Length: 398
Image (cartoon, rainbow, N blue to C red; front, side):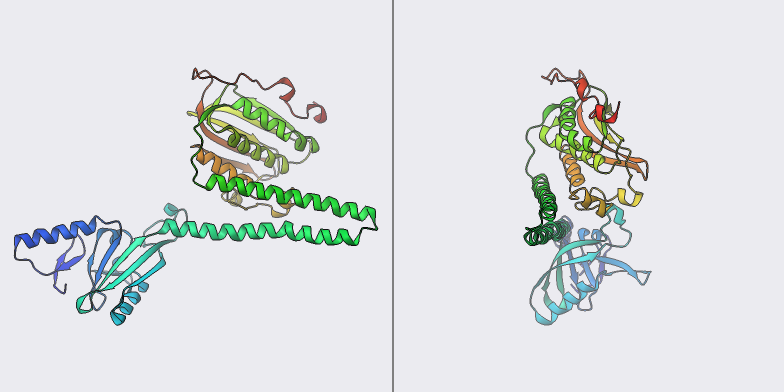
């Protein structure tokens, strides 16, 4: 392995071959290693790279640059790999570790979702004459999932701690106020509010867990958009009436979405609930249905407080709240929009938002479906009834 002949296509240095069979065998070995997904390196005693397969170069494990100057020779790009190689030389024992390495220079973090690292499983083994073999397997997805789980557990613990702590304090205050009916009633109402919030949080955690669990969706069925809107109108009636908010359905009738009705109702209901929660009294929330570019578009438009541009990129993250104080006051869990996003994704669609601070927001679900009259399959004949054309029409004075 200490020869000087360079194979520029692979970064491999090997002894000169005299026999054609040996040359063929060497080419076959090189091609075989290049076909592996794992990165493979062979390092000389001074950490000179005598071989680097295609995956090793693609992963950025080797570089020809030193302090910004192209030296024309391969060298290890990560000091931690050099340290591991030296430890193996000294101990003579194989080392297996998992690491997170910085992305190779020139890799755009935007292409990795903003991630500036990649996870690897590294195995370093001693060879003869101070050489070492390094195998590097990309396990970025496993590391990403582990991070998500850690963050999820931390977030859930924090979110559960708040209502549980409040219930504990309120119950203690209630016990001390048993001889004061007015105070006792006030504390009991707060306990009721916090227990409802805790119940919503647990329910939404279970729903999100099901959506993220990788379980296959039931066989998609044609679902009437009119039926979905009717169900959401019915669910939202009480919350809208409490704030004298009018919910107006508009757009095309007879549209069909292919999917699971329960999840589709949940997604639209979450958007409408959000619109009501973040809108002032005596305003209008519009539910629009249309057929656009081979997709069914369901939009929820409000006249609420709006969302700042920097928050719009993150509002579909779990537990993210653009206005934490307001969200707690309205009983929000920070999971509603994350659930909407997962339902849209699981149905082969997407959700987006446009918003102007102080003027309102528009959330749009784009989902696979059919335009009116596109199929002969049995379709729901229910129409949005006149009484549901405007929720709380009487209360709004229309």
